[in-house]
Length: 179
Image 1 (cartoon, helix red, strand yellow):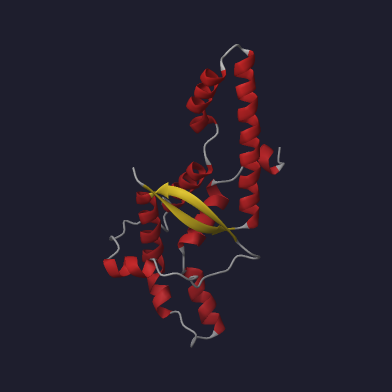
Image 2 (tube, helix red, strand yellow):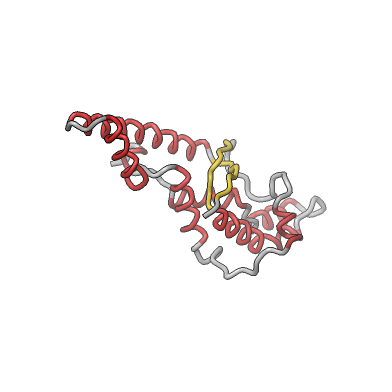
């Protein structure tokens, strides 16, 4: 399976939760390695054991993002089935710049994730198919109310990923301080 690195703008809260998760996973892995060493395993054997259990016990953030995104893309509003993007549509999807749409409150931070290329294709296809009509109607000549109405209909890839992380990439209760 091939993967592609994409840059995503996420909220500071999402980034903070992921940073906390990374620190916690690192501490837990260090403790696990220490326990294996105390049980008499050599360092190479202990590291090999850690490598075997790491993907399931402490999944990388890329896997968390991919899992959350798969679940979001399975929701009724994005599930399709969609016609594949044409070459022209693929080209338009790759143009740089921010899509119009509802802006999250506050600033966003950029993060890079390595995701399966098929998942990125599904994301871009769903995003374009759901948003293309509103994007085609959106323009500066419209009144503010009409621009807001159309913006609410636009689901950029970044917006879909932020929704996925909010809905399905949530931390375990101990990560957020909840009990």
